[in-house]
Image (cartoon, rainbow, N blue to C red; front, side, top):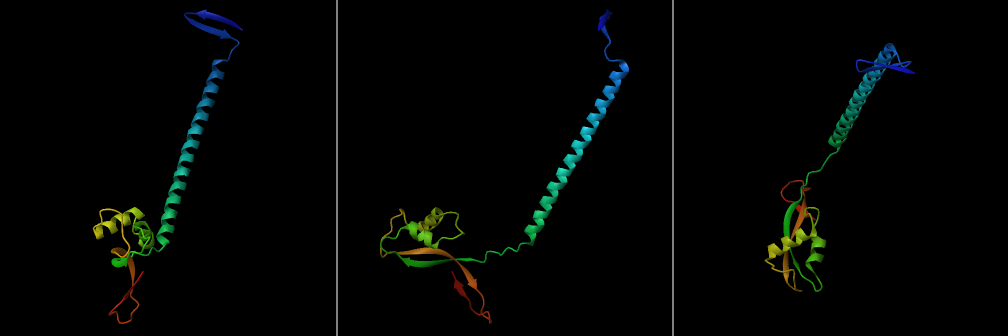
Length: 147
């Protein structure tokens, strides 16, 4: 290959012609344009898939029947037995209406005016319980509470 320098430009003889350079440039531009179209189409397809999943999950969730919480909070008395602890009582009487056993214990202590977690055999405690009303009586005049 031979090169010639004129006015600060170097021309290499035997390299690519101007027409070949322009042709390769057009091919590269067309390839970039195709890749951009593929990227946009892929993005749109992914977006459609995500929206389809969201809509389908909402339809499925709407089809599930949720039963409203009809439980009623009530109170009962218990007599503390020997070896009973607030923890044992909480494990026996607390349910999903309390976020933790500790929350139930705090409520029992508050209701009964306890300043410590010490309880004694023979003492009576007020215990919160949730019950579900059984309204199966035909005349509607009374109902029983089931735990």
